[in-house]
Amino acid sequence: MKYIRYLTSAFPFFFISLFGQSIYTPKLVNSKNGDHHDFPLGVLEATGRLIDGDNQILLMHVGQNGAAQGAGLLVGDRLVRVDGKIPKPFSKKTDTGLEGPQALLGTSLNRCSSLPDPLLSIQVRRGSELINLPVKLPSSQSFTLSAPSACPKRKKFLVDIANHLVKIQQKSGRWQPGVGGDADVYTAAFCGLVLLANNDASHLSSIKKGIEFVKKTSIDLIDLNDPKKGPKNWQTASNGIFLAEYQLATGDKTYFSELKKCCDLLAKRVTEKGTMGHHYSIPYSGGGLIVINVQAHLAWALAEKCGYLVNEKSWHDSFSEVKKSLDPKTGALGYSSRARWSPDIAARTGAMVIALMVADREVEFAQSLADALVRLNGRMRHAHAMSSIGLIYGFSGIKMGASAEHSSVMNTWLPYLELSRLPQGGAAFFGGKRNIGGDQYLGYSSIGNAMVGMVLASADSHLFMQGGQEKDWFGH
Image (cartoon, rainbow, N blue to C red; front, side, top):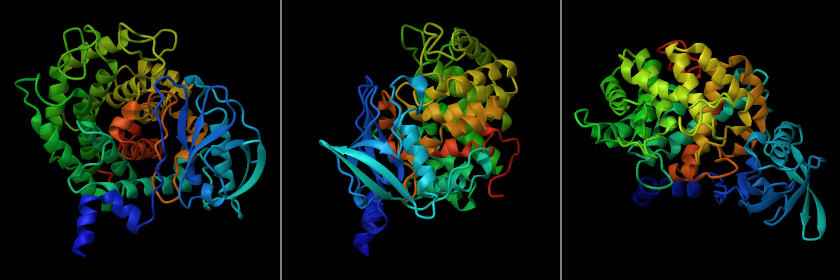
């Protein structure tokens, strides 16, 4: 027993795999240039690869004892037909979203898993042979996302993700990142938001552990007398968002002073030109990073709902720079005022929509940004190496600024949900078609569950950043 206790504290992932049901981890190889795109195959428990113009998914890895292995699928197989259909070609263009083999496979998995005899017919090319294989799927309901808030499968998936996040949280309140540095702080904020959104009172202790972790490792380092010191703006803003949503959900004002410190530090780091950077200094020859500005605005807007007095000068200066970054061709926010055109629009545009709608400021501008998100929703996984924030802020932005379109966009992304869904609970990381190095830094497992969980939760309108209007709702 003493040995088992040592294993659970020192090697929590080993314990889950050895003593419980193993959770499949896709074998993903990042491609910064978009030469290939690796992604999970959902309940098949396998990893696929696509290249531009290909209509056959190449199997790169097959998990132990999963549906793919049980059906006899092998590494190197190419999926020629799925559910009797030949997929359309895959395109690495971001605007095409999930079109092609991913859409067909995800839709087919969703449909076939709900049948009385859940079988998926697949034809594979193995060398020079064409082989027909029936794949026995784990039984489940179908996603019925015309009314996503009422979909039982969506709700169960969110519960499974939340329960999984509780299981893999470390004693310190931390979730395992991909590397060291500050990745665990940023990841913890999003994992904590998922636990809040799931609204399970039994998870309150895990949420508080997450807050205590970011407080100790990040917020306590803030010195408002010297804004050159302290945590990076990425984590400062995410901490503020997390703490504000916690107070709004629970009514607990214990961490209001920490919330205020985060927001005050962000205000002190806005330059006279309105630019912001990773830290105090402004990168790219003073051009800055709009993705930092918009997350700061979201933290300020949510904190204002908690009683925080927003620094109007900082808000105005920063917002002026945000508006200058608007790309007239797309109607979305670009990299900066110096580089308004950028394909990765979702994180910047979505976060700004949420901030303005929560603060009830510039509503028409926010709605115009949300319209761009809807039109260009295929881009939501492409967010400057971080698919996670593209999807998290993209879906929340649509929910806040173009709520009538949320269900239709969710339906478009149904294959993404199905290909992320694992049979033993939790979600696999499903990133963008190009660089996913930022999410690798955060940790594929932890941030993968957080991003899918936040997409699912966007249908519920619990969090204020997803349309919530009532305070003190958690646990009810």
